[in-house]
Length: 111
Image 1 (cartoon, helix red, strand yellow):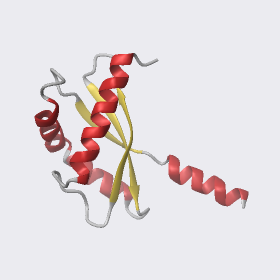
Image 2 (tube, helix red, strand yellow):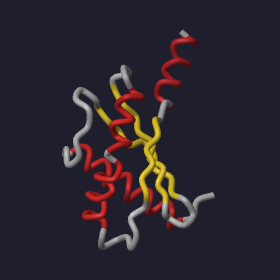
Image 3 (tube, one colour):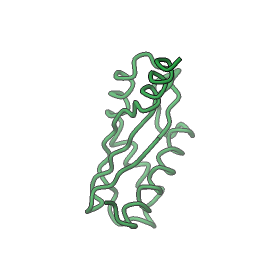
């Protein structure tokens, strides 16, 4: 169960990382639309698991690897943005969120 502090920090990181990618402060693979669907914080606020949804569906694993390689750059830009709110910037771990694909697959099976 997440504490209120974990939830607040997760919401802050989700908003700020989403803005970083939407404003192209960090480059993302061309032709990919990226959405930060969820952020989960460790109890000590040292690690952030960031779940990313990518559109279109081709080469998601390859695009995720490119994003993972830029995690340090994203963390640096994030640190510049939230340096007044957080004492320590957490380590960012990116994961692929395939819940939309799963829901679409279930919908096709039902039809």
